Image: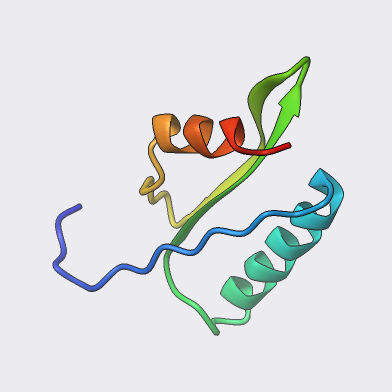
Amino acid sequence: MTDNKPMMLYTATYDSVSAAMTDLDAIEQLHKDQMIGKYDAAVIGKENGKPRIAKRMDRPGLRVVPEWLAAAAAQGAA
């Protein structure tokens, strides 16, 4: 990251991947409406008991959430 702007990290847990996808779609719409700026987001679920990134969005091409953090978060998912 080359700029020194403050960064916020939000996490949430959901009862289902589809519920998380709904919120991710809402975040994307906020970005399209220019209500929010750059973001990096991922929906993480489990497949065969292992963490799997179901969907990832980074606008505009910003990778903040490292893959190891996403995998660690999924380990805590039921």
